Image (cartoon, rainbow, N blue to C red; front, side):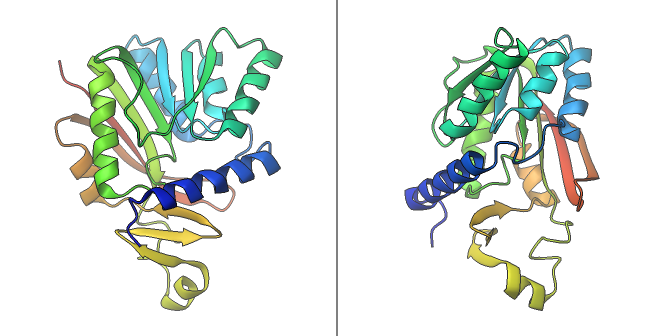
Length: 231
């Protein structure tokens, strides 16, 4: 299977659409650790507006909005974004949180150098080929203003669930390897990031931060990365 094919992208979009429809709080309501860190980094840089990619049902978008940021949340699931819009109205945050349907395999809508910060939690480790990841990161760099920040968090290759870390018996039971570093579990396709990929995607950026940490009830080993577009 060639992971960049439209068929894989469409299947994953349908899988996530179903998951968000069936589980209105799929990832809970508490903000991610990455969003909490990003709020401090963005605030320290004097940034007040954020483009969030792969926002899902909005737990991080709402957290950032409560911290005073204006957030433009995007996702490729209309079901998730409908929930974001409804919750924004309920919480009186619709002046700070906007939501738009967008697949990041397509060029980002903003014009060149018009965005101050981009945030993405658990997006880059989804079903993208390495070429698609490089294209996405290049698009993010294009839309960022000089000095703008890009903060993302992904599963680490050191995570116990990573195919490279699991025993062969567990791997055979839970993961189907698809090639190009992608694996499938329970219908979801993902990638675990190692140092080489983080370094590859940081080419042309100033790498300000890369930190490992654990998160979740059955903790995943995560990597948080902060990149700056140099002036």
